[in-house]
Image (cartoon, rainbow, N blue to C red; front, side, top):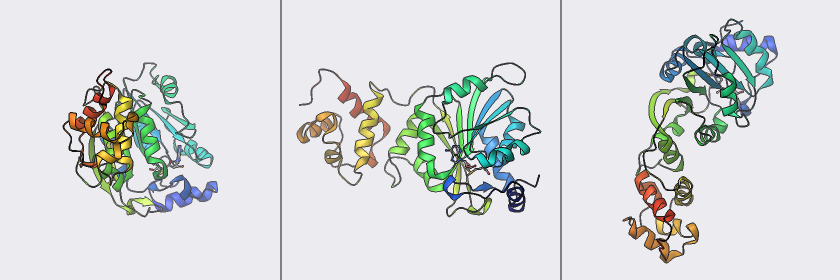
Length: 296
Ligand code: SAM
């Protein structure tokens, strides 16, 4: 087996298995071992943990994760990579390769099935990591958060621009629905910027590693999470519009009632969603959720 973390090694393995990287599957493999180490280290995976890896590729990250964690379950969609992974990961008895589309995986069932460690005990923590396929970063992330699969952390490589959006504070140009959703569910650490040259083939843009710690308690108290996310979605649906215009129609409120809603929440109706904090979105949602407190 060639050296997994070099362009030459990746080419040699590709030749042996008649495998060519596919752009449509976001196959940009890591060739910088220091970045691989940084992902595994920042994931905080330890010997009592189950790690779920999304998109193992040829296994460069899987090998390091298998050394650090009690067990690794690696989910890869590309059938052509499965025999390659079987060879690269053969020395590691604590790795299971799962040939599936992560967006269709029943993660709670997978965790239930895989959480027994090689010593027969149950994993104490579950951590997710991966150098994500960029064409489906947001759906993967939202699935991991919304399914509430009971994981401690998510450590992922994403496009740098997506990492900036996720970590953006209210009022900044890149703050949006994704920032609010991730910040609601997680505490965020921006670990490191990774240049294009750290991959083979090199992507068009720079990347970044972020570490997300799932909150045990939400940062705002909500009467209805569903209404909170409706306010976020509607507010950012037309982000150039004032909140008064963007929110009109929510819960069937007409323009006047929407103005009243904003007024009772102490929010200037000419502001835009990109300036609202999580607390302000929560105030709107909680007001909308209160039975009997009619705004009209
Ligand atoms: N972990 C490897 C590395 O760092 O070199 C590969 C990372 S590469 C950016 C993304 C990987 O995700 C590819 O192996 C690709 O085949 C896989 N992938 C793409 N779509 C997927 C999906 N829907 N479910 C699971 N894996 C997927």
